[in-house]
Amino acid sequence: MDNHKPDTDDDDSYIQLANTRSTHFQQHTPPRSSSSFEGPPNEEEDAELSQLILYTPAPPPHHHRHHHHSSSESSRRRFSNSKRRKIQLLVIYLGLALSTGLLLGAVVGSKKGGELVGKYKDLAVGQWKQVLGASPAGGDEVDGYEDLEVYLKSGNATNGFRENLREEWAYVTTWNSAGMTNVFEGYCNLIYLALITQRIPIIPPLVPSPSHLGFDKPLPMINFGEAFDLPRLRSALRSPILEWSDVKRAHYGQPWATNTPPVDGVEEEELGCWSTNQVIRGRWPHRTSLETFLKLDVAYTPVPLSVALPRFPDQSTFWGLAYLTFEEGRSTAFTHDKDVVPGQTLHSKQNVEPDAHLACFDDLYFVSAVDGFEWERDVSPGWRFVGVHVRWNKWVEDVAAEMVKRALGVPESGEVPPFIAVHIRRDDFDSTWCRSHPEGECYPPLPVFRNRVRQVQEALAEKFGAVTQLGNVHDVIVTSDEKNATWWEEVSKMGWVYIDHEEERTVERYGKWSAFSDFLVDVMG
Image 1 (cartoon, rainbow, N blue to C red):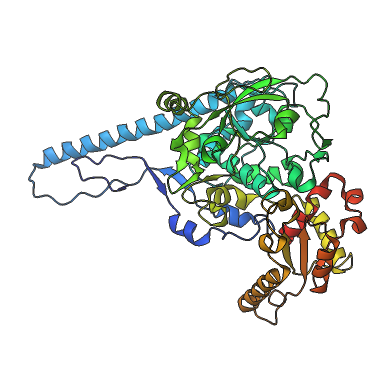
Image 2: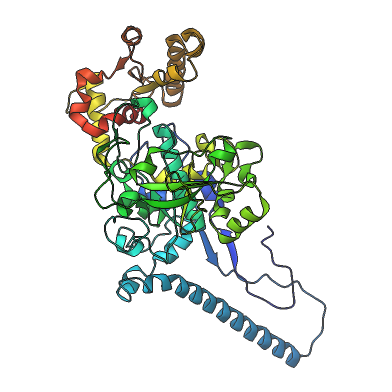
């Protein structure tokens, strides 16, 4: 887009949306690391991210023209232009003031009424700035993102989500997707989708995949905010983030199975959701145990084909999905795509259209901006605008450090040394891809992993210097879901260590967090 205004006789001031730090943004945005959660919080780094702001630039200079005017005519012309500029600027300022007033009107009309105006007057503006891609611009910290009563009718979870959602806000949610990496990336994509649509994300619990833990075991329903520092994330994004535990009552934080009775008094509610899985993956709607856990009777409507990423049709685009959360997008989808037909709920067998107040998508893992599976690259908006701000809660890091120290024989008072973590996924492949193939053809043998570790060690030595601590890493910790004792003996013969969960009494020590123990070790490596 051309940011230069054509030369005219009038010095019209204009509003232009500009990235005032594009060069800085490209040079200083943190690179994609091997772990989305590496490193301590860095407040200066967060504050230095690119900012998009509204500004009124000086009018472009006139070219010199060979026109002759009398001095009085020139004076009148300058006066006219000056007056016109003042009027235009006044209109601009009034327009901005009116827009801000309309945004604040939702807060003024809330339950607390005028009391909220003074305390939360900047919330809507802060959220609106974030929609443009901005990080906190400095100045006074915006307060209020932790106050549930601003975003929900009740300060606590209620028996039904509809009775708790405020009419003046719009919301968006999704469900878990397979293993923990998929779940985390999907939830970060949810938050980014909320930012660009000006909706409030409602994050479900972290649910370990039954294919990893076993289908016969109760699953721990752990809230996202138990593992990750949500207050810090809200502050960094200057935007509210809710969890389902804030909205509707259920057995959060407890072992749960599909036959676990629901919490007394909780209502079963119908909810219409969009299904990306039906179209992008060419499969059935991605139903998960969370529907039963939250006592939701969900109907899925396939998204239109137009949401697919052109070069990667098995990926949907953020703005393709965002469009569906607006009335225009919903109407266009139902009008122009004959396959966009609401499905039936499981229990009441009712055809329910996607909800407008609480937008819902069955799976947000397979979502990209320009390229397939771009989370591995800096271009990923889920990483760039959300994931880079996520930090573990301190006590979760402490649990992982305890396990690593014991595995490496480090005293409790000692520091965790640099180590290389190797995750080798095996056991759940036995019932899927490797069912009809010999083990040697399906699984990479351990020497292949040894060669890869050697390559990592050489790269570290080249980067940091072979005589430095980071350039001379020998400790290797292996995590895997493999149950074959002979295979683990081969791991030990290579000089690598692993966490023996039976000997460690992991379940006894850490309870519900034992399901995440290997994951925590991996991200520390």
